[in-house]
Length: 317
Image 1 (cartoon, rainbow, N blue to C red):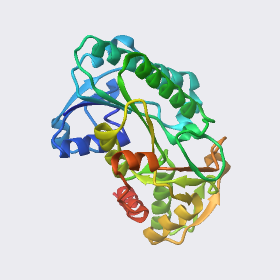
Image 2 (cartoon, one colour):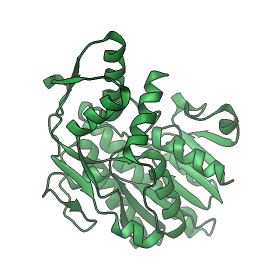
Image 3 (cartoon, rainbow, N blue to C red):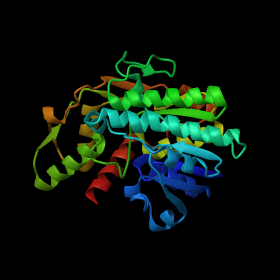
Image 4 (cartoon, rainbow, N blue to C red):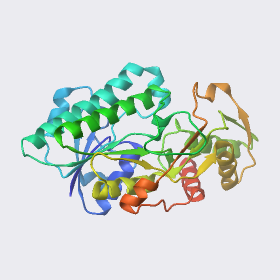
């Protein structure tokens, strides 16, 4: 199978590319101009097996050229994926995440109408679209209450993609991954940030570690399980459907912090720093994976302690 992956140089994109290559798929990796050489998480051998292309989500011509490449499947990951980045420039976030997705779906639909190809298109959204709600597992038919430009723009991207499916028949499948982590994730995200600070504190023999809000409950997955879920959806997802990629288990961030410290062998004392807290934080965000499991048989296989161990090892390196 020939698979086009946008954002192939990103965190989840790199792990997905690795899985695709392991299964001997042909991979086209679409990346921004600044990262045209490929993803740092991949080995040189893996990079050499990918056809790397530059593209720009804000440029309709660039998107049209990308969509002209014959493929069997497309995984659309390219986006502004950080809440903090989206708050700095909400307009750009909407331009890339929502409008860029609409342009890409439109270009792919045009190619399909010409008979050039009929790809399965996996549009990767986020569990953050649900926003605040009752402390229970979120289901795909729950109302959306996004509370950041990132989450709102992803909800917009979903609407654009599914509208294209209804209008043109482009085989769009939407994934809503809940928070995931693993080796190679940026310290702009909470678990690697915890790990980095704990490792630094351990080396300095300092007991106190600065943290943000530790009250939220999160569904935490390993990025390698998420990559497996994306592959499963390419093979067995139904066009026009939305699937939570989640474990169904919630973890309070305070508990995760102490588990990380225990794995690291350091008795860390968390100290809340208001500068590290989000302006708006969803108190409880846990997903119901029932639809995904019923459709594909996928289930997460990597325990949280193993993920935390691997994140710590990556920080120590």
